[in-house]
Amino acid sequence: MNIYVGNLSYGVTEDELRNAFGAFGEISSVSLITDKFSGQSKGFGFVEMPNNAEADAAIKALNETPLKGRNMRVNQAKPRADRPPRSGGGGGGARRY
Image (cartoon, rainbow, N blue to C red):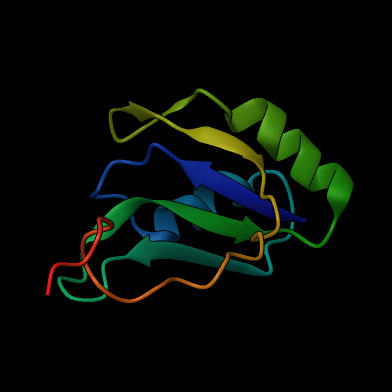
């Protein structure tokens, strides 16, 4: 199961997430989402756990618990929705020529 972990302190590391979730079972992967330009954490990430029962236990136990001073938001990740194509350009008003 893919688990969303939000409201993270910017100082949280992937190892710290792995340790927190590892207490509940096997972990396939951990990824913190970072800004592609600065490399700084965006305050959320994902933990993949292959066993759904262990993942459910981790979600119930860790949701709203503190990690480095902030209460984590933990729930099952929703699949990325197909986004409509973005139109190029700036403002949305009528064009003046």
